[in-house]
Image (tube, rainbow, N blue to C red):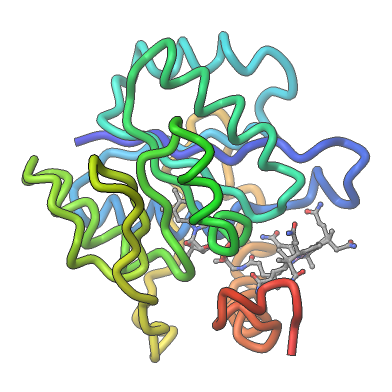
Amino acid sequence: MKSILINPSIPEHYPGSDLYIPSGLLSISTILQKHEVEVRLIDLNTVCRDDHETLLDNEINNFKPDFIGVGCLFSVQFVEVVKLAEYIKNNHSIPIIIGGSHPTRHYNKILSNCVCFDWIVVGEGELTIAEFVEVFKSGKNDFHNIDGLAYRDKDGIHYNADRNLIVDLDDIPLPSYEVDELYDFRKRVNELISSIIKLRNDKRTSGYIYKKNIYAPR
Ligand code: B12
């Protein structure tokens, strides 16, 4: 099984757009690899700021992913997330799963309004994507037991329950960097490793644990 994960670009006027490391997507990549999914991560902030459609066409036609994952940490990325997903759906018909702080907060509204998305991971994604991929591989498409996963089917929008936080952060494997042939994350390995613990900590202290409070750090 194969998956392409995409980090959408952040507008250049946004502070620090060239520094942002897609640590959420790197962590998701690592989990997918552990579940025998071949992953290709495309960071649109580093490899290509223009003509994303040609890049996507080439990557999808060559790699032939079974599903595509898109991250959306900042709301400012969401317009691009929709544009990419609509393009992928209309031209390649590949299922799309998204995650990140913006979809976490707005999963219901997004699934109600945007048919281009099939699933949304709400909150921490490692355990949810691990369960998701096993169901997806089985071809049974029965996602109703997966906590932290929102999706639409013929009966409407479903969200089972919030997923409990991962208690011991040591259970999360360090991100793999062997995911992007276009950009070598190992160039930034020191920066990345030193930031991981801080990011995870910030995540808990800045309100991420309760998705409704994502904009209201406590
Ligand atoms: C650390 C952090 C930063 C870091 C950089 C982060 C980075 N990765 O490089 C720094 C300090 C630089 C930063 C800066 C800013 N930040 Co900031 N930041 C955060 C913080 C605290 C944690 C983000 C993080 O990296 N988490 C760790 C990773 C591992 O988790 P994650 O990305 O959430 O991914 C997990 C899940 O979401 C999910 N997932 C994510 N993507 C995907 C994709 C798929 C396919 C799947 C299945 C799952 C999935 O699985 C992942 C693993 O569990 C969040 C608040 C929060 N608690 O989330 C704010 C937050 C993202 N920041 C915010 C803001 C506003 C900013 C700034 C604009 C502030 C400013 N005025 O300058 C700047 C912009 C910087 C820029 N242009 O890049 C807001 C965004 C609000 C919004 N709606 O857009 C947030 C939500 C804080 C808040 N509560 O308001 N930030």
